[in-house]
Image 1 (spheres, rainbow over the protein chains, first blue to last red):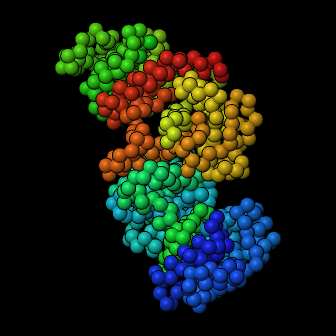
Image 2: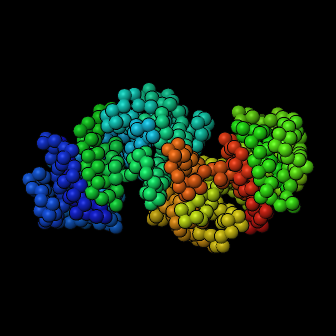
Image 3: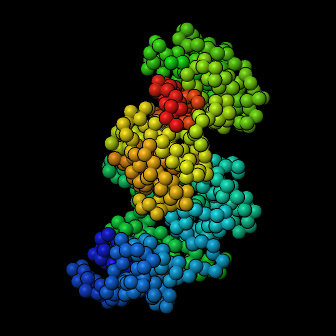
Length: 312
Length: 312
């Protein structure tokens, strides 16, 4: 597997990205190749500091950087030799099997949608992330921020995309799907959510188990796949981040709360596009970068994009 | 102040409601009167068990109970002598200054909207609840569940209703209002949220400070008033409940997480209607009931409904 890593992306790039890439090596096999995309001098200098042979990696030198503040849509034409633009080009040309970056999220999403095309039949791609439960299991929730305002048919398809994610990445057979709602009853929610409930109930591709309320999130026997629009999912994810930060600030110690750390999860795959792309948090440090790379490996390993293409 | 309490409402009624009412007495003054609405025999029996003189209360006997499973809209005509129907009748006739119940939420909302009218000029009433912050302060968030799908003008008015709540109940002068969104930038969010941003920015009745992301909730210097639609607010509130439960189950100890307990908050005022009504959680026990009553007192004490009527 060839995993492309945007060395220039993220608040602490390039140093922490290179450190995270070095750390991830021990979890990968000899058949895997990490492709570091970015400023060659910085990469070689940092590897030298770390006493790591550059031959452990393939280095693709670039000369430009899409900064956090750059306008995503213009970034690709203005900075064709940026690490993100080059990464997407490599992905399209099959020079890499997956690509990850903790850089400009907007630019990563523009690249995901325009440089890599949406899979035919997919109405809207989504950002999927993993939610830990107190019983040790994981589930997947989508969308966590790509489409804030979502039609019922799109929510239904998230159920299918999420089921494929759960089956192949989390290895859950016949994953149970629930719709995040403000009550358990079918009659609850916005018109879009109510219509989605009706459609999901009657869709044979979805093992639909009804609504889930947010007080059941993170609990035992919660769903394997949780479907919501990108606005609600993004609020949910960021609220989790708020609680995790307070937990850390107040020096509490607990194995469940530790699992809420985004650094352990690493990144958010974009599902529904023709390639395997994972977006990391801008504030990622060494450990988060390593996990972003390993999550990209996990998605590439099962070729989630291909599985979705076959199923849709 | 005359506070009406639905003795028959909640999963553990009537016993815990009477216990909570007894506990609240010590926080009220001689000028306050608690009006216990419900089955007289149960009330007198329980007060006798607790060695409390019935003369501490006014008792309004009722013969019917709106159960948790009853259809809210039909409940009033089918059970005119239920504690909820009688409570709303007393409220309308000014026999009480405020009314609270941990009973059938749907019936309480039907009563709030139909038995007590919406204040002229209020587009949609809302459920407002208090969010604690780690710096010890409280803010108010609305709507947390009354209207799942909300137009921009309604969100703007929540900003005004929430400001009145913050000013009079939380005693915050010139409260800072923020819109819960998925990014800080003005261009983020659903069309409704974007339109609300534009309207709030230009509304002189709102001290608008822009968007707030959910990772800033509960933090220092967060907003005094947080505006969102009832779907997002309900998910946020229930997710908080999920974390609080996990915190308790795992025997963690922390003064901030303790404040997330709904039992300490007690109930959710309905704002925008012509009377002071507070809805408690169905699973309320003794302490939660006491705090629901005290919160009703707080809303009645400043006559929030009257303040809103004057301001709108």
